[in-house]
Amino acid sequence: MDLSLSIAIGSSVQVALFVAPILVLASRFFGPAPMDLAFPGSLVLLILLSTLITGQVAGDGRSDWLRGAQLLTIYLVMAISFFFLPGASASR
Image: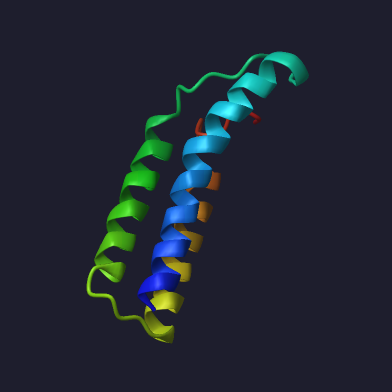
């Protein structure tokens, strides 16, 4: 269980640290407008909150289906709340 948690958490951190700068660099060449790394405060708050929740769940090294269902529910609520936040998305 420890190995699977470390792989899941480690790979998501690696993707987050690698993909965001690559997208910024790729937007210089492929996008209609260059992107920057200035994220809205609500997104930063959601990332911080999800990090704290994951740390609390994975801290004791045990897991079961109920904790997984709770995590999925929390992430779904976060996604829905971020979708409906006014001014959080630049595409609207």
